[in-house]
Length: 460
Image (tube, rainbow, N blue to C red; front, side, top):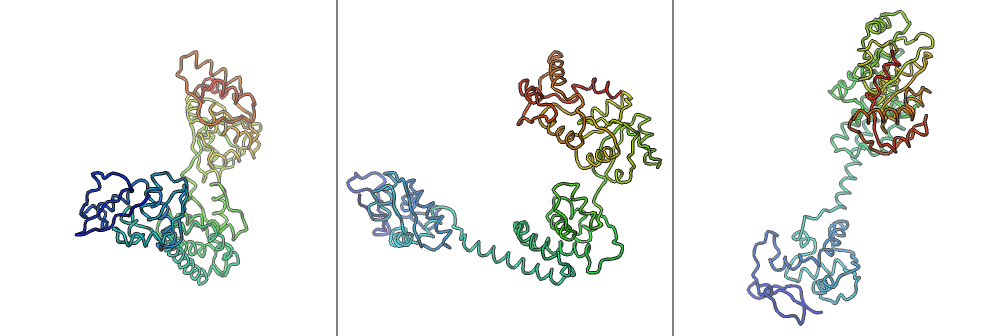
């Protein structure tokens, strides 16, 4: 196969290439260059270079150029070439490409394009054929320089701050540099966050510790440092950086849950928000004599449910009468029904998740000598939650047996209740090896409301 890449002819016309020995077609007419929306490439040249058999070449060359700092150096290797691709490459390179694999040197291709009708180098040609090229090497160098500048300035700020007097500060600084979380942020945000973290820890750990550290609210501290009361909320990068500093200062592990994070804040005499999350309770009758415990007993006497905050749980004395059994449910509807029915047994609701405030209450009740009994939904998330609560407190399964599940399933089917199918991956019940297979066999999800009458009988 022979032929040439379209070359500019007389009066600016562009002869279109065809393989030797083939008959002329309508496309072989000489066409003067016209505006095509592609920039400087003549129309016929643009069309020829854009043909599908050359697509793989341009994609490979683009990748190599962007990695090379847009310099036409090195080579690309194309494999499994089709006959159409070999023909197009032969015409483009002015050499026979007869094998399924070929190597194309970018410098030679650059020269070839410059002396052809394209009349421009490789990088400019690719820009005309597609999107602008990205100099990835320059981008990496720029990002590296910015990171170096960011850490250099922040390290100087750390050294100049009173925080530099603490031995643990250097370990903390090294750790947050290694994690890379800071440099994933935009540069202004990253710089501001680092300086705010230094400022926050300087306030919490002055060079000369006071004899009696002052207790401050996390919102007040956040306002002082960031101007926003939410600047140190859980989930923010600043909060994570500061907590890592507190952990290093006290030789503690970095916490993995909300309860651990609250405990870590308290080590630095910072009180987190303890009033927004609550646990739903009913019928608690603690024996202590302060007004707080008396208020709980009064609400229990009036069959009124109670929402307790973490703040209240810190001050309540939850010593219960001997041999008190605390029933635990998953859904608030059970508490509502128990209150309406005037049930006598105490009840705690996990509200489907057993958040920190729920576990704090259950921890206190278990420590006071109460025995716990748990009931939840017969679905896979419900079984997972039951495993967690039963395992943590050695609680008694409360109507959570295979027999209870099958009885409830039969009753709902008899009543004509529309079936709710199980979804998600199965979960084995730690307290009953037969429950999971039985649930898989029937494929029915049964929520606590289906067992409400029997639960209320137990609570009465």
